[in-house]
Image 1 (cartoon, rainbow, N blue to C red):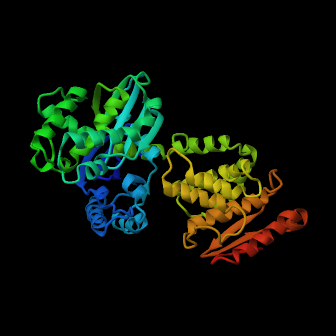
Image 2 (image 1 turned 45 degrees about the vertical axis):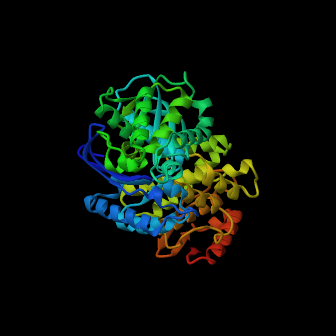
Image 3 (image 1 turned 120 degrees about the vertical axis):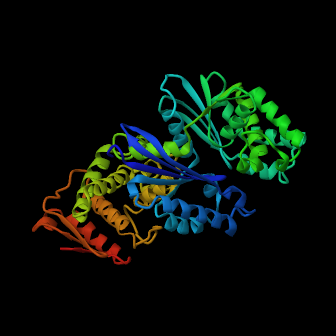
Length: 494
């Protein structure tokens, strides 16, 4: 990307939706504009974990305003991510279908550990560089992320289902502050966070930082009331809890630095923060300027290049962990990408390169399920990808990758596939044909093979004499033609 390029990150949080726009300048991203709206979608999950119509409409209205500001941005300049509320919501697809149309850009629901990784990136990018071992804490509306890292590298990441909105609803439902409510909320939070003690224990980090949300709000109140700015201390938390108890209810709290949108959820957020302090033995937490949205912006830069895209390293690690044959994966990737390049004639080079990279990932991973079962390797591989902790990947990206792995052989009707998605279908066809051509686990003879496509029709042209020279491959390709006849697409041999 060129210096001066505008980039935007949209964070669909449980309490607030945020839009951060920055300008690239010599590898750094300088803020141009920041918008935040209190949507409080986390309050809109009913007992069946469905978003209410009102909660969805609040989100859609906010995204419509963000979309107006993003007019003119290209797809490579914007990334939108959604966190815990949409991870939980059973009817999230209903919300997302319209939300994507309104915003004009895809929205990635990211796993908890991926959220933690991006939070750490955002915090680290806005801190002075040092070799200190960092603990980063982020208390959101319905989840809390804990990360250990050094410099720009997150080393230990976890997400826990405890947050300011959820805890305020559960333990302070009428906004009433009592010692019993605070005690019960803190004990419940510690019960969920207790397993973090082994990984994040005192001594495993040098400096603790708090990101955004609850910690930012608490830090603002403490600084505005005479406490040391830039830090949250144990004494400060005790003082703040005393102020809330004195006020007795959220609507009566009047504290300098406390914004109106934070008032209804300050009780739940404070109780979770107290639990983190007590459990991990924190005395001082430094308030950080970076947050999830900043991590998303810098991740946009990293995704531009194979060598900096964390997804590339994740794919390599999964392939190694599940003992996929690297030579076979490489030859399938080369053949599949060569075929896809033939289909993509006329596609802008950068876009074609991006799509080839994703196809190559599927090729690298297509045999990872063989460690479990050779005959059902494609099914086990797909299951692994659907459920793996895969840094850099959104849930939708993992699902798409899993469908390519599931579909690299066997029947096509078993796939959760939109056959109107031309790019996905063409990637799948190229992968399947490449697997067939490489079935003997040696470099295939592909000289003169040509794959062309028009509409929902594909045609593979074979050189004269090829079917006689390679009868087994020819037989498998004829079987492949029959497989595609059971879909809206056709494959022909010429």
